[in-house]
Length: 164
Image (cartoon, rainbow, N blue to C red):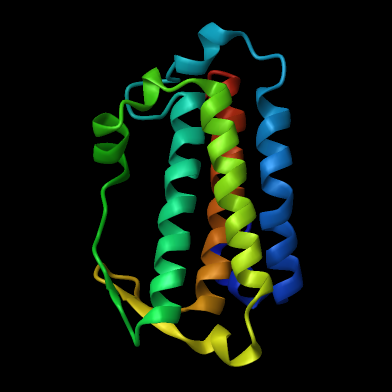
């Protein structure tokens, strides 16, 4: 798998292309899956396939919100979040597949539109993540998002095979 640092160095067009492919890759991964497999966790420490999808959906909405804040405010600060806590609070295991897929696609389309509207100076605008990741530009976020997609597509494939 490609590291975050490697994604950051890749051309912007390549990072955007990864984001553009992900909704189709996710939909294809779920095609024909036994409904019982959607909520089956590979082990006690790893998410079930539906949880991976819901994480992608909610993280996409969060990324887009942060990107919009960066454009609206100089150097906004973003709180640390706990993905496992969010999964429990939002009851990911009870989420319907079709609705989660549709929402992820909708959020990703909005994100791609956001990126398409950026002028060159916009890519240098930044916000601060209040955890160890610190200051990130919009261009940095694009690399993080490409890496995040690749990481969770691999996790989804493993979960669908029942592997951790």
